Image (cartoon, rainbow, N blue to C red; front, side, top):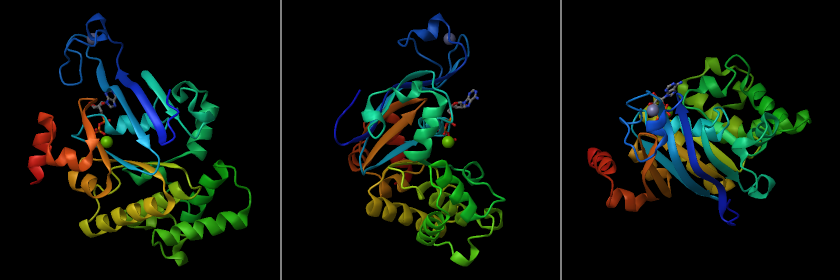
Length: 280
Ligand SMILES: Nc1ncnc2c1ncn2[C@@H]1O[C@H](COP(=O)(O)OP(=O)(O)OP(=O)(O)O)[C@@H](O)[C@H]1O
Ligand SMILES: [Mg+2]
Ligand SMILES: [Zn+2]
C-alpha cells in the first residue's frame, strides 16, 4: 500500500490471464512464448505490472500491438476483472483497500467519481444516438448530480472547451466526424472533474491535423485542471509530446520505465531501442 502524498494511484503485480495456467507457467521463472504458455496456451495479457501514477502528471504507456496496454487500462477502469495484483487509489478511502477486490457497487462509485475513461473507439464511451448534452448528463447523473441547470452549464462548459459548437449540442455524436466524436468523449469524461483520466489511443485513426488539436487540448486540460493522466499510445511522437514519464510494455510486462526524455535518449531495453530508432 502506498500513502505517498504525491501518488494518485499505485498498481502492484497486476495480471490478467486468459486460461487456467499449468504447473509450468505458474512458475514465473519459466519462459513463455511471447505472452503465451507453450504447454497450456494460457495468454498472459498483463503479467506482473507495477507502477505509480503521480498527482498532476501524464504517464505514457507505449508498446507494440498486443503488448497489453488496453487490457491494463480496462483493468484500471474495472471494465475487466483482474487475475492477480493490487490497485490502490489515494483519493478513495485514503488509499487503503485494494480496489481490485471491491464489490461492484464500490467499483462503480470509483468509476463514476474518480476515474474518467476515453476509449480508442468512441462507440464504447458514447451513446451514439443520444445528444452530446445527454451523454454528459448521463455521466453527471451517475456521479450524483440532480440539478438540471448545473448539468447543462457543465455540458456547455466542456463542449465549448473541446470546441464543439454549442448550437450542435443536441445533435447525436453519430452525426459527427471521428475527431468531433473523440472530443465529445473527452468532454464527457471530464464533465465531473475526475482527478484521474485514462486515455487509450485517443488520436489513432484521426487526421494528423485533428490529432494535433486533440493532443493540444489534452495538454491544456491537464495544465488547467491538474488532472493525473495515463496516455496509452503506440506512437512515440505522441508520448514525447505529452508525457513526463513513460512505461514501455512488451508481452504484457514492463520492459522499462522512467523519464520520457531519458528513455528516448538512452533506451536500455532492446525493444525500446528498436522503437526509438524506428522514428528517427
Ligand atoms: N479474450 C481474450 N482471450 C485471449 N486473449 C486475449 C483476449 N483479449 C485480449 N487477449 C490478448 O491479450 C493481449 C493484449 O491485448 P491488448 O488489447 O491489451 O493489447 P494492446 O497493447 O492494447 O494492443 P493494440 O496496440 O493493438 O491496441 C494480446 O495478446 C491479445 O491477443
Ligand atoms: Mg489497445
Ligand atoms: Zn501453462
